[in-house]
Image 1 (cartoon, one colour):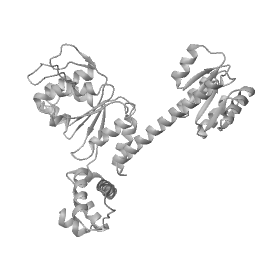
Image 2 (cartoon, one colour):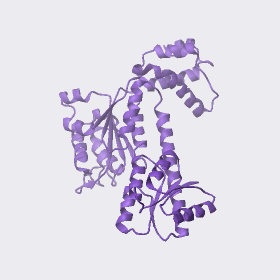
Image 3 (spheres, one colour):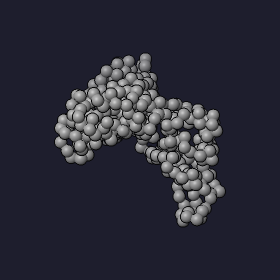
Length: 382
């Protein structure tokens, strides 16, 4: 484990260095804030112990600079002259913990253990998010890179996002990536296919109902918005939602509360809303099929997902991805596509987008030879 000690007092630096080296840790020291910032931005430390009272740049300034520059090492602040308000300010600024002088050996070692364990969890979470993100978003076309860039920018916020694109283009994968990369990723993620819910049940599904509110309501039921409280709700095919349901969704977004069917008390909810549509909602507004005020609430950010025909250069990568996935899921050995077969698939138009390509690859994996040839493509696709 690599540790940085920041203190203008040589005796404190040496004492802490001796303690940590006795625990078999690698230790570096800095005698002022500027030196500490230079080292922390160049090297990766498992923990940083930083004194508050230092000449020139004090510990609070060091902490603020490390946080602003994206240094992820947990920082433990040390002081012999601080009060509770100073400790609170340190934690709010981004410190992991606050230790008072004179230093207690057990407290130091326990704090170090807790800090490094938290750092490991944060790292593991980021790795998992990147795996999910990378697995889902396959391709290097400029239009897809633009989508990825937007996802990275919008994910850490709570902004409502409207994802537009044709059927089968991967809108649900964009929504899932936003969720996985967001600060709400440890909270619920609830998906709702608005087109699949009968109009007479949409209120109950979205907002819940109370026992006895209608004939089949034999018990209380939490709606999708309440299930997603604290997390994210994904409203797929939002353009197919009835005007009555749209009005109630608008109320949830405006007032952050809902009323279950048959209920007489409001329920507060804190939900981030992602929505998707394959329709032109501006045209639907003009036709009177979609509320303009709801559209503006949902479309703080609009992400347009390109069709597969708009990023044909990604087809070879997608074929490899679907082949690998199919072999893994079915316990089959590796199978390849000839260059001629891939070229034919690139030339083909894909009205069903990525979903259609996935189905075609699966069909060729089952029916085609090894390698899959251009003739296989002509026989089983065209």
